Length: 118
Image (cartoon, rainbow, N blue to C red; front, side, top):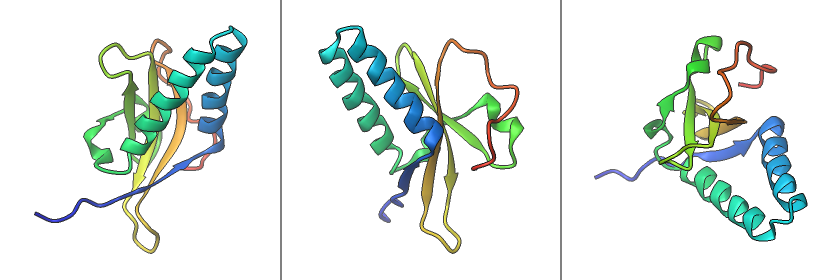
């Protein structure tokens, strides 16, 4: 059986800001343990995208872009967050997963894609 492709996982600035904002919100609410759990959960989830990112469903926002947008739900059973990302299989560059946004699962899908860093 061939070895799986290992993708580099890159966080776009908007994703990094959302991750940091949630951690800061948990810290300011007095939840050092909750902030630590959040950091561990998001780090593990993002690391998991390095192998088999195509296991994740296509996001509704995919219709907004020429690139296919996928979503990773966190936590998997009762999602509170959607990690929106695109997969770039390489060509001249190394295979990469670009994490664009982190959105609350209860939020309505985007009607407009912010920026053009796909």
